[in-house]
Length: 360
Image (cartoon, rainbow, N blue to C red; front, side, top):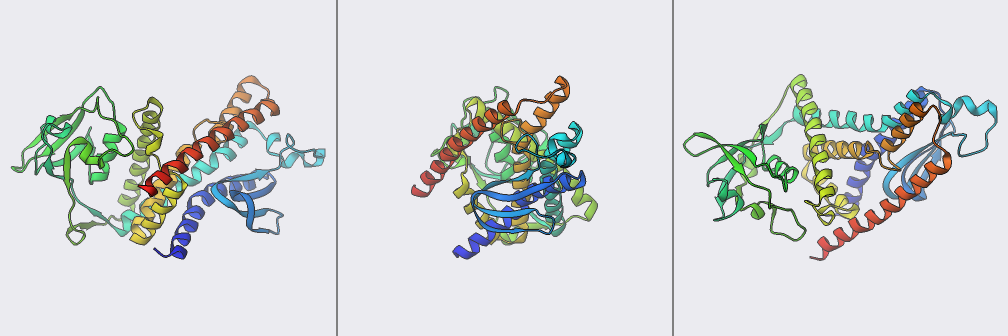
């Protein structure tokens, strides 16, 4: 793939997802009259930058792994009392919470727009059908057979193998069997139980569906049916998709914490940029679908109350409201630095994941 083409794909993705997230913070700060120092995509050395007529410094930095909006804050610099009305920390708690949450809200708005456009333009759909089943595998033990069409997983409609894979990942190691509604070759619908109690997803393991003992039927592109929705149904599908992916990401975080899915299975920045370029090359609808999913992921991760993320800032504000006094700047700075150390260690692990994949 042309390197310029790949870079263009990554830049557009960062603007639509990370940039729109930071723009949400910017817009909320503007609404409440809070002075904005800087809006940045990435960290490190400034590559592209300019100062707007409203004295806001807009920057694209060397390492585009996130971004930030720097607001006027009397806890971080010495200010005159005349500037206090424009400071973030001098605003009511509810206003600060809205400013912190506005990035996540912006991501959900972007996801809603992108999903709605995808369903309006039309998506290729097919019901996942089993091609063959490995003897004595998890799928065979559940009673799945060649020709079975998987209709639902735990009462959730499955329109593709992606839906099936997501359901399996979300339930890895579960002591409760996964309920599959399938339609056999004779048109008879049955409920079958998939036992995932001993199944784990591991880096370097066989291809995903091979690991549970089945081979999917993948229809040729020219045999797929394009399904389009009118605006209101498309909007409803988009809303459902956002809630679906929020639930999925929540389950994946849980699976990582309990060890059912290793950190080694996660994509790092290089892997993410490669996936972005591939979706961009696949066409407008696949790229919009990717942007929608990634927007939900970024919004979800930022809502987690972990130091350095928006969720933590919201939590600090709520604690302040309950205690009737703010957290000390020293404690907040300490937590932020601890969060940064964790992030750097985690980033190194993700980069190692990418290198292992590229060297295999």
